[in-house]
Image (cartoon, rainbow, N blue to C red; front, side, top):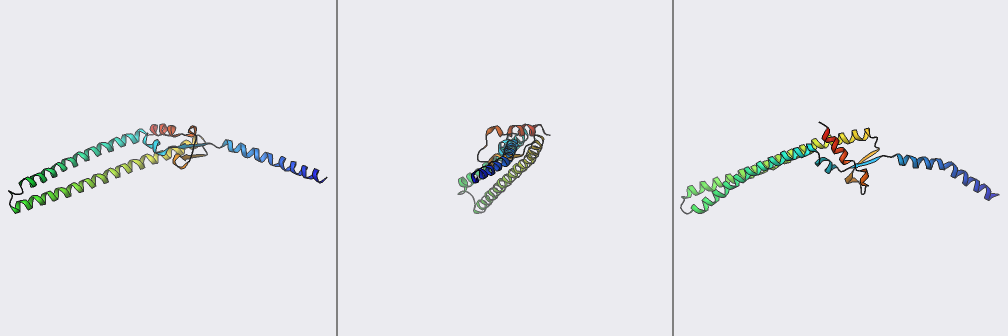
Length: 175
């Protein structure tokens, strides 16, 4: 008799919890996930590539200016080395001071160029990143995603959940 009561109680418990387990499993299958590769998504946008090309052009321009100044320094060093014995001490001192000033100017110009390039790169990154987040958020709402994660924060994700190309396309279409 006790066995029958325990068996009925166990069966009733199983029957009562079956809908909850089934409902939980059904809800789990309804969860919509996606992930984006933030770095690739941003760097593959036309907007970022145009900005990066402008940065590269500016970098090349700054390098040319620094190369010209470096050439002046090299020439001044060569002049001093070649003519130091024939120069008066006052003239040698003057040339050495000019060389010292050229080196200071080179260092300042180099630091200014690095700072300018870094600032412009950071501005470009921030500008595109802000738009990227907006597009991801809007896409997630529109397509009814429960979660869109960054690829870098996930150990493994099936590539079929990668929505990076869709986000990049949307970002390219956005003005």
